[in-house]
Image (cartoon, rainbow, N blue to C red; front, top):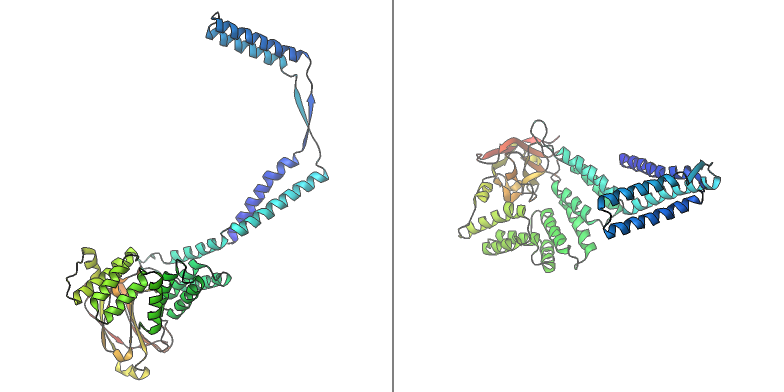
Amino acid sequence: MSSLWIWIAVLSLLALLFLVLPLLKNQKAEHVEGSGVEQDNVNIFHERLAELDAEKTQGTLDDASYNALKAELEKSLLQDVEGKHALQYKTQPVSVAQALMVVSAGVVLIIASLAVYLDLGRSDDYADFLALKAQSEQSQPAKNGQNKAPDFVKAIDMLEEKLAENPADFEKSILLANSYMAIGRYNKVVDVYARLAKNLGAKHKDYARVKGSYAQALYQAQGEKFTDEVNVAIEQALAADAQESTALILKGIQAYMQEQYPAAIKHWQQAKVQAGQAQAERFIELAIADAQLKAGIAPVVDKAVDVANKAQVIINLSLAPELASRVKPEHTVFVYARAQGGRMPLAIERIQVKDLPKRIVLDESKAAMPTATIASVESVDIIARISLAGTAKPQAGDLFVEQKSVLVKGAKDLNLVINQLQK
């Protein structure tokens, strides 16, 4: 931001110079009168020009002759009046009043410019741009071919600071919620969307979308369970907009879990109306095809979807017996795939210790975000972590296992044993 204000100062100084320099060059003009002969010469010029026009009209004078005579007449007039009028300029010293006027004009210019900029300027957006640009550069492929993950912690700190200044900023609130979602802080996502929904009100055009996202965050925060609170949020979103895609996707998932496959297909087909292309291709189409298969309906799967279906990692997960005494049956187990060197999960599943050993499939349907899925990379790092605190963030005392560079297409089943202790 310092560079921005430096440029503002430089440009303000240049503008001030354009204003001040002409005022400092205060000059006085004196007029030198010519003789009375000048007016006579002008009268003669007009008389002779009228005669030439008359001769041309009568046909006694052709165009070439007329133009030559007219040019000669004009030349003669200029020679006669040359030097008759002159303006002489004398530089005068600047008075106190003039100096005050110059200084006042400069001060007014600077104050007015800053006032307009502070009211209409976009310095906050510029700061956000610089921060997000730096974050984007961090996420570009490194020299070794691996992707460096964006620093979501820095982005979150920045967004929280901006929202503390302006809690009503809708776009920054959405960005903050997405950042929380990317690192698995679902309770924080719930808080953001709850505040947004309350501020917007049920009649706002974005209320249904916010309420649908709130329902999704609540569903994830409560262990992917359709509690009464989640169901109420879904119905509120659909009451505001019957085509709200996130709420319809959740309705489809609920029906699918209850083995009501035709109902699930209906909800997901309806969700495609407002869903983005990436979400439709990477989740909805795949979910519909799976539900159709279970319902005995032959799914129509195009080549692109068939390729995406093959993007998966199958894990046979177990816990080392010598570490079983360190955990409780209800402790949460996070199993996720992320891009090599990255931090954001591309596919994630959450179970409990009591479910082990278990066969787990990480594929497109387990995407943490619709725009970042396991099919977007060739290989992933697989991490299975037993969290004593119930959060995805690693903490001392957690048990884990990690396997790097696992192919996501055509790979054999992966046997993993949780046998390491987080220091």
